[in-house]
Image 1 (cartoon, one colour):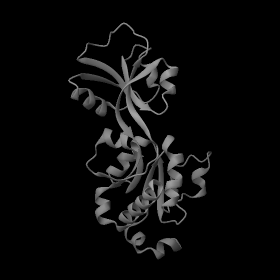
Image 2 (cartoon, rainbow, N blue to C red):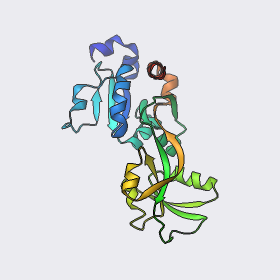
Image 3 (cartoon, rainbow, N blue to C red):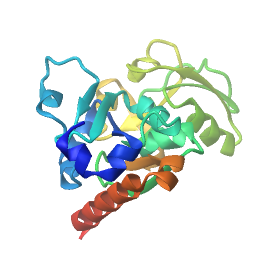
Image 4 (cartoon, rainbow, N blue to C red):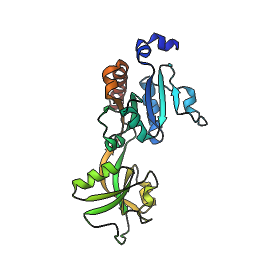
Length: 230
């Protein structure tokens, strides 16, 4: 047990607090926000040659897990981590009842949109009431088109979404859009916006109720978000 954990009775009672963070686009923006809330990973976290997925924080009372964005929500929902950071797109896709998202961190901003080929192509993906859509968000996509009275056959892809129309896989895609440059480079245009996306602090509801460290951490992140917005 470290000196820090001895000084923290909650750490002695509950063990290390587990904090899950996403690899990829959000992480670079998240690290300063985490530091502002007192969550600073050990130096090994920043070593690009280190293939570890679990790291200590500087106090020795917290473990920081670096996983895929979609997995952050699953780790927190099932209690493998008490706290995490993830995009609101992931929260909406999984819709886990065990997740609570108390703070919009104001980072990782983009949008989830529908896109299709800019140039007209011979339509071969169903009809006006039945579309084939490539996406890694099948639940959001199905709900979105269902609300419009359209049945969407979702083809699950984890990347290279923009290739789906030209490859004959699907007539449309649903994906995250930031500048729109990738869509343009692949001959696609944004035709509808499903939702605005930003990174959120998420917590496990059971941990929120039973572990006082979780509520304290939420308040630190909320204070930081309010300072940033001021």
